Length: 118
Image 1 (tube, one colour):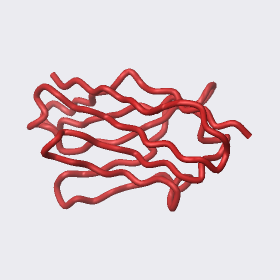
Image 2: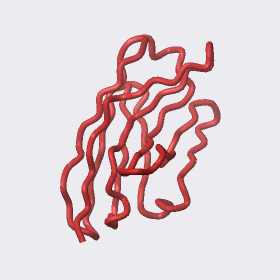
Image 3: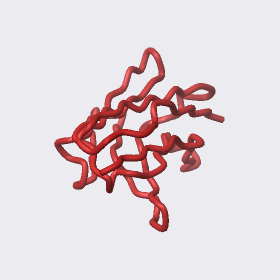
Image 4: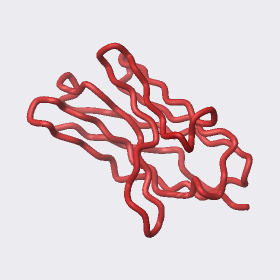
């Protein structure tokens, strides 16, 4: 089992910045990817950014490219999402995720709310 705990959400004005943090614990050695998803009211959960351990590739949703940056510290078992130039449409609950290829298991945090006011 893997436990993920997010922090750093809140209320910010459009154009502002927030930094989300995710701390992973438990059976983390079986993971091969971590990332951030978000779900806005009435919408499906969508990928925001993801880092793949093997090869170190990083993927971003088109809507956040150039504004958001995902980073990882393997020694601390932490992942961050730096969000700049925030827009009202970025308002959502942001979830930290981790993928375990053995058994194709996805783990999720409880989420942290980001609200961007116009």
